[in-house]
Image (cartoon, rainbow, N blue to C red):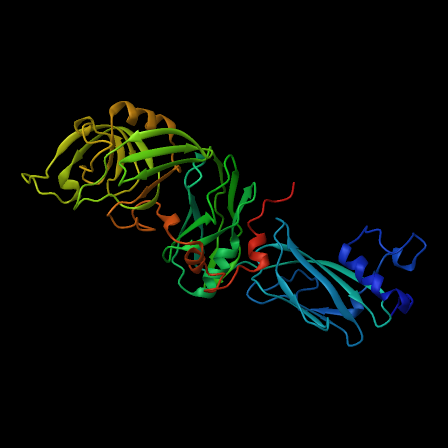
Length: 418
């Protein structure tokens, strides 16, 4: 080889310099042999990708770097032009590095390989290569929700996929590519609702006044046979104050907290026997100044003693099936003392107007001590918070039942460094 090896006595420090990266000031002054630039390691390694002549790498195949018999690989990074890194695994003896996730198609990569020869001298090789275009007929994209804006601390993130994904390994590829960054940081996870829909929520509610950014790294990534990721529009949300409305159905009272301070207590009426209000956490879905409510919408036959057709004002929706917090002037005499509604939470017009003005989409409405069933997690609004964190994580393709998230999966949720 055409390099002058450094003394064996500096091997330990060589490893430190490689770990710290170029420019690290470890192990002494500029006259130290380690201060010299690493030699060209081209002759020390082999690479299974193209080396020129206009050829392109096959994105269907893993990237592999191999060291000569007397040398070892100490570090490998592969990053595309958009800044996406390729995860890989280095063998214990440093003889081989192999990518563990798909390369993007139709992309340009920069590959940096650090080596060490039998005498401990550091080497470096940097090269670029292009990947070919996919031959797939299908593109997988994600549409994120809700729409950009400001929401309450209970608002889940949704991802609607353009194609169904059923295979667990393919789901893992998709999930790794869907990134949620929160500032301040909030640990969270995706949960597969079905083959085309995922929800993301933190372990606890979002921090008040957080900024949440959601984006996809699927573009150009192979997901499955003839299925490749496509470009998806990014989403940015801001989180407002921590507003939680806690209704005690047995006490016929609602307490409203803002940033953990009680700001109001309202007498209410909830569902009567047979129409009991759902227990559990619900999330505000929207607000409607006027709604016409009919008993037929919840299966009550016309002419029944329970039939109704009423104009309702200051209606705050918490389920798609028709549960609201709203003005109920006809039941003021029972508010604070009895449950007489058909499942909604009723209050005076003045109180309903106040509530309407002080909550937004994503705020939390929780009901306790009702005889009703617990709000379902999915399909009727956002009951996501009614799953324990352990049950929630079981819906992720990246974790196994009873295990903690791997460090790299937790790290993907952290805010990007500025």
